[in-house]
Image (cartoon, rainbow over all chains, first blue to last red; front, side, top):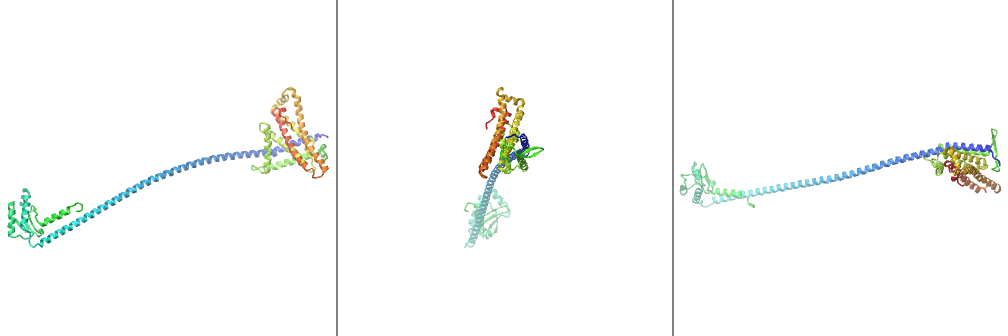
Length: 246
Length: 228
């Protein structure tokens, strides 16, 4: 066995050259690419972390927005409920007022209708009573007793105060008004009743509208004592009677 | 080409100097590894392919071995340890090519590798501790240990060389003998075993070189020297 120093030296140089070659063409590029990948990975991780942070921030923002939306929705619902309740109350109040007005109008209208009906009925009753009275008196076989009306006229004059009586007697054209022409006897009977009461030389006048009875009239006033006046009073009394059911 | 690893066969002469087949084979290995590395390094991408993944795994494994042995960044030792491993592995596996003897089956190649490790050990030791510090490390634990430490420096390099030479040479011998005695296909299992032996020896050589350098860098020669 021999040891070749030339081969030993060549092999040593070969290994050193191979060391340089592999250092340049193999180890450095691979280490560089590993480092580059690590840098890119770290950059990607940083980017991912940043994206995660942004995503978390966006999620938080979205959560806040959702919460705000929820609150706004709740507020809107509450406000809508409040407004709806107010509108409902307003509508109910308006409807109630309208119904009250309608009821009041209907009641007023009904009352008016009732009053009109009552008035119409009274008017018709008065007219009917007056017509009946007139017809009854006109168809009486004998005229009413003039002395009775003269007595009532005397009582009416006697019930008046002296001032009122003097005012009546002081007027011009003092006259006795009757429904028909008086006979001399009837006129004498009437004067016999009135003269003691201060009636001096009254004139006479015929007014068929009196139906029956005697009025004492002057330019200063009148004392009514006729059946027409009584019917008028009755009619006015009936007309002015506002008792329920009248 | 040759019948025994103990003799070098001249392939040709260059400037009057004989160039052996061992050197020629080594150049072939250099060409293969250099071209392969150049081609691969051109195609390196951030998104690696299978071959790139394998090479990155190889580099990362070497760095892990260095980091687990030596403190600090593995940059200074990566290329040396990686080149030793790749060259020895490729050289050992050359025996699979018919007619080619592995360069590591010749003592000159192993001696050159061991010599490089020896020089690297001294160089890294002096660089890390300074010349005085490196020399003072031989006097540990006391001055009486200087001769023993010096002898250890030489013997462990010799053991590194002889271990690689003996394993690879014996494999070549066994395969050659079995091939000559039994026939063409019989040595195949032995050749497969030779593959495993070659890989293991490459790993052992590289790791021992790393440990020797680490002991020189840390100044703890005798304590860190493993027994392989």
